[in-house]
Length: 442
Image (cartoon, rainbow, N blue to C red; front, side, top):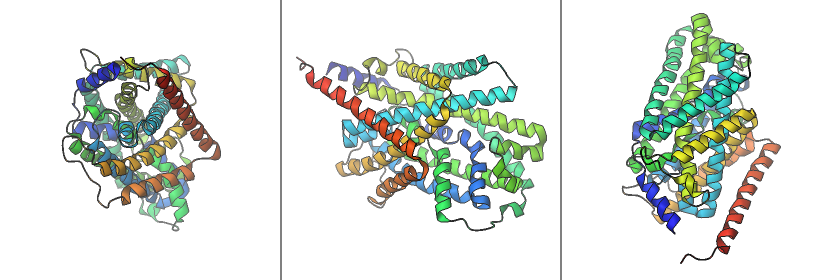
């Protein structure tokens, strides 16, 4: 009971400093990561000139998810994001599973982007020594850990700067590149099958993931019943519009050649109208985009560790709050060390796949949680956001994400996901037995 009281006091000490702009920037940085620099080629290879259809399907699915996240976030305002939403609605066991999945999604995703960042910089600068790989990963993670420990306001400002540096080259690519689009490259040779469109969307949607982690600092959001829905839809709308514009321009410039550019398709397209300088600018933009993702990751994900420790699933030290900066500094440092360790393993490809699969399961749990929170009329100080249409949207969200798991995961990956869930169940059972054997508090 005493530990729980300390945890509640620590939660109350957090500063509610994130408004609509700061939270929308966090979500946008999570969403617009390195994927947009490579996925246009994949979409073209599968759908040809009809590639934008995949992005529209993704927008519809993520729109459903966002509606559920928005209502849950407006009803539950403590730190932890989806973990807190599910735990409040479905109890500690479901919350434990959601927390484990959220931690894995953030850790694996952050490690994958850190590896990609180091490899891109090494290739761009022509570095040879393997020591540079270790140094780059350590430097970028340490930098963002220090920024986040020193305060959530500093983190939000850093992400706003990174967002500007990342968006400027992409907007320039769209605005200038539009003049070099060949309409013949945009003509559909045939209408793709629904199966092909949905299968492609199941891969392209990876570029839209990350919102579940970006909402983790919900205990540091001002007026969450208003801020969360506005920020979430603002970020999704901006990201979707940008994705569609980029796909249209790069497809219009490269045409059928785009499908073969699997490494730097945007850089190759920029070289057509801006030469080597344009190519380098887009590569640098990709690096900045990765930095934006890592910035958002190290801001948001440690709050899940904080929430897990606050509720007794991890050591209580992890929910400590810094006396001066009033941030969960131990959780931030721990998350940074874990991301670095996974990144240094170099096995980011498989980890990235698991990151996305766990996100789909989280979306399903959140949709179920929304229905329960609404039935119990759970809400914080203000009037909560309510999805129109009753249970239609949450049910559609569950079905859509269940299909995504089926469509995108190979047999071995499904087995791996099952093993992760089984391990989480085992850990919960061990903790439950340990608590039962403890003498009652006097």
